[in-house]
Amino acid sequence: AFAMPTDTPERRFETGRWTQGASGMPMLADAVVSFDCELVEAMPRASHTILIARIVGAVPGEGKPLLYHGGQYARLAEALPGEGGQTQ
Image (cartoon, rainbow, N blue to C red; front, side):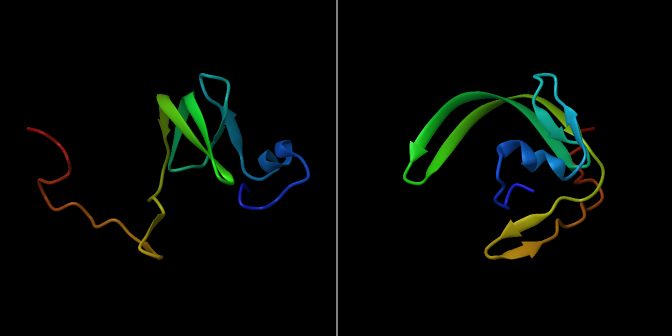
């Protein structure tokens, strides 16, 4: 939805199912995770703008993340027993 050009910015939200975060910002309902952020700074650089934001909320979803690294898609390895990030 966001990689395709549209005639108006609002048309970006016609694809997908959207909810509203606590801040009132749109969040993709079926995402693996959605972050609700507060804009801290916008830095124009050449043809882009770098946005620095503070996460104020997160909504976990279902499924496995899509990873892209080194010019290719990848999958996360399954955690070994005892390495699930859990403390005892």
